[in-house]
Image (tube, rainbow, N blue to C red; front, side, top):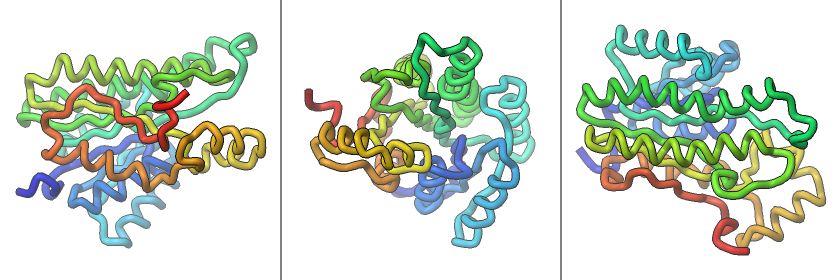
Length: 253
């Protein structure tokens, strides 16, 4: 098999009914993988599955809450029963909340951490136990610029994404001996539905363009190559790393 072929591989992409997750799912499916879509909105998830299937992609759907330990365990047990535990896991599910810390309640803080960080641990733990039995696998965590940098009003997101970076390193430390590679990507400011209000804010848009050496926002498809590379066997000696795809933002003052 080519080092750049995902045929006969099964990839679970969390939070993939729309946005960046859907973009990752399409690229992995295009490289030959059977992709399991995930989300908690069953109607939207099924719509995405139908759209991708109509394009010829090999795809299925699994609706479950990635921040709920019992739901995650049950989902992976279903994968076992179906004979298709994932070879590749992309921990993409995430939410954002913009609020000053002095106005931030503990429940909102915990909700962001559970969705962005704890979910990656829960899904990663279940996936890794199956990958060890299969002789290896790939875990790709979706971090952020905020894995390294902080900005006002997004403290829980920043803490969660910083945790994703260190979780990735911990996964590599514990599971590399079992031929599991755990890496992350750190997207910069991307043109997505989540960031549309920021794109439409002239002051913020000007700040992003001025702060980014590339002078623009990133496009979702510009993340696809990194995710698929980290899923390929060509990246088997890459482990515990976070690759920033940010137009150069983290490289300059």
